Image (cartoon, rainbow, N blue to C red; front, side, top):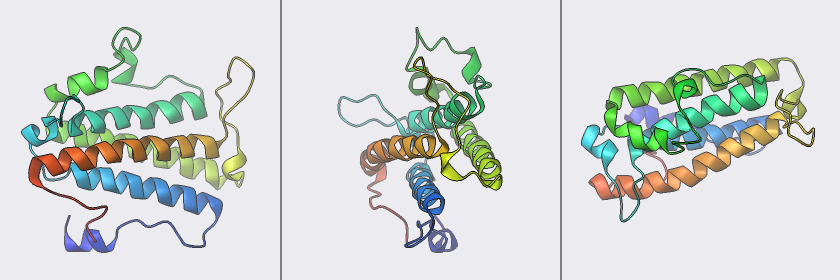
Length: 183
């Protein structure tokens, strides 16, 4: 990252509202993933560690899918759009990880950036109504429950945190880059 980008590193507020704290934590995880996958060519994004087949490119594609599917399915109650709607997830649950090696670094980064932009827009619109994190999404479970915005966002924070840990190890194996942020 550039020096100016490091100065803009997202940090959750120390005493913000609940929404600011949750969104701040999510943005910090997103920024960490972006940093851990930045500046690498296709070989770097295809690198693995140990017995795992997880790659940085696979993480970008997987998390793009998570972003799109969480907000489309859980919040809006609609199927996720392309390319996710063309995948037979039942027969190929690792499709995002498996096919990332076929994509260029630019495509993977664009796919992820566009998915996060869509998620941010959905959340911004939801919060602009004044309903806060207690608003319920459109998805209804078999037992009749609906997730609130808080739960959807916290699930994303958890998903990113798990995978940023993977990204830490993979990136270190590629070029020795370590740390939590470039600042």
